[in-house]
Image (cartoon, rainbow, N blue to C red; front, side):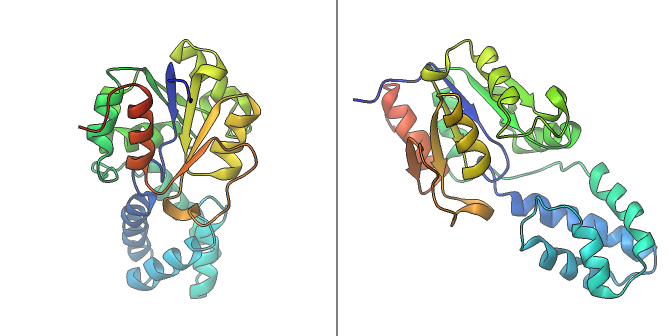
Length: 231
């Protein structure tokens, strides 16, 4: 029988909310900035969304979009600056996530472990309205810079410290097989994969503990283990 966790680590993007919503907002802001620079905003928005289909964490998305449009590549730094400065105000958690996290937080501490620009990631969290249920937040870039991003162990270890539990007593909930899941299992943390978002069709890596078709389903599993049920 699976033992109840003593703490839960959570990814943010495409785990607690659909990252596509953030990207749509961001590309709208970048397209508006492009219009000021003389670019067609609708064309730029379409090119940006097309560039994102190959993976949103790849570098050079704005450069790729400008190349698609045949636009001056010298415009890229200004548009990249707009991207980095954007702070969302509203992001919608996946269905059932807010209520389930609230109940789960009554049983175990919850700590977010997220990659990316710390100011932007914290703004995303605030925009979801989920910050109040968390014991702590780890932005991996604050640990070792970009080199400390998942699957590097630094963020996970910091998260475990905030949870106050050993790896074997924690569960990591995330969507990225090669980041959230591989990084957690390498440290002996049980990894609960959610098959949602941009990387949902990628296979589970070796060592995954459980896999769920939605974040709500994953949280229901943890609630059951903690004796909180689903009602």
